[in-house]
Amino acid sequence: MNLAEIAKYAKIKGLNLVGTGDFTHPLWLKEIRETLSPEQDTGLLKLAKGDSPIRFMLQTEVCTIFDYQGESKKVHHVILAPSLEVVDQINERLKRFGDLASDGRPILDATAPQLVEEVMAVSGDNMVFPAHAWTPWFSIFGAFSGFDTIEDCYQDMTKYIHALETGLSSDPPMNWRLSKLDRYALVSNSDCHSFWPWRIGREANVFDLPDFTYNNVVSAVSDNDPERFKFTIETDPAYGKYHWTGHRNCKVSLSPPEAIKFGNVCPVCRRKLTKGVEQRVEELADRPADYKQPNAPGFKRLLPLSEIICAVLGTDSPAIQAVWKPYNALVEKFGDEYTVLLDTPYEAMALVVDAPFAQAIVKVRDGTAKVTPGYDGVYGQLVLGSDVPVVKPKPPQAPKVQQRSMSDFFGA
Image 1 (cartoon, rainbow, N blue to C red):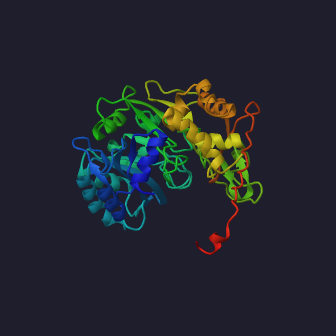
Image 2 (tube, rainbow, N blue to C red):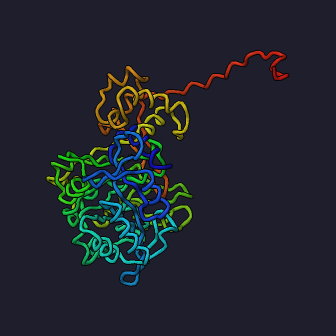
Image 3 (tube, one colour):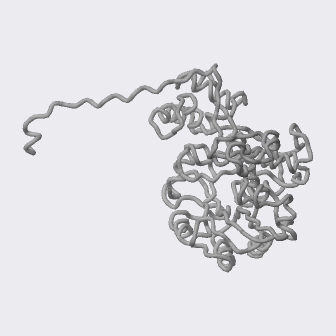
């Protein structure tokens, strides 16, 4: 996994701006310097070699662990920066709080306000926001070590917080239920974990900007302006690994009312359940589930194309040839994965792949497909329904073996 491979597969996915990740790590920062070239006057970077259209934004994620009112709090934060010079200054300050070379997402012995103060003291153009805000561990609203408000977490530095990342397990409607979040933009990103299209860009932000620059992206988010920050692409939140409350070892998955009925204790082993995001939102919400925030950027729910194809094939693994044959056919015909998922008509897709694949894509696009909720580290599962027939992958043909001559054995 390197920046050239990330750029290659980001283009296949349909992205044009990707976070570099891990600029706090000295070896990865060396990779960034050697592989990427800063664009003049944009605050973005591109591959130094070749003509890839993909641009990179300097970005990292860090973890702060600190005590607050007698409890240990563990929060992940995303940091954006406009130049390598600024990155060097951020790293110089943050290395006082922990070993930046220990991990791509270093653990810092600093409070959240300290982190923001250090980063913003370097440059007012930097941006900090809480990562995957609702996951049970290591997040601002996490059930096990989080806060009830952004103000409790960032205190006097809250004035510099303009956004929060929804994470795979939540989406805008879930966050709109909290009136205290109204002034924050809801950004949608996902750790890619690898360059493969089933990981990179599962979630994304869509902008309409006069010029493609760092400052324009950051200001569109800070202003929460739906004219420039058009919408987010969200996985169905049920697909997230911590959407419902549950216990993986006992295969117990519970909706919020069911979990409350059992006192958040596993009915099988009697241990404490991992509280899901939906239940945690329910605890903090002051609005009904159908509330819509006016004048906010929109959202669209999707799932990775490979996951949709897997569901049609009845397989759990995207790492088989039967998945990538229809995937590649659609991407080659229509340009990239997001164009297929968002815009390509059923009739056009059905001319390229078997009809069930096209049916499934449309069902995900229009929201009629269902997802069995994820829980306690287990991803949710796409359920297409009986109207989309399962396509059995054809068994691979055995290679033809040519009869060998005596000269083959004697090296002639």
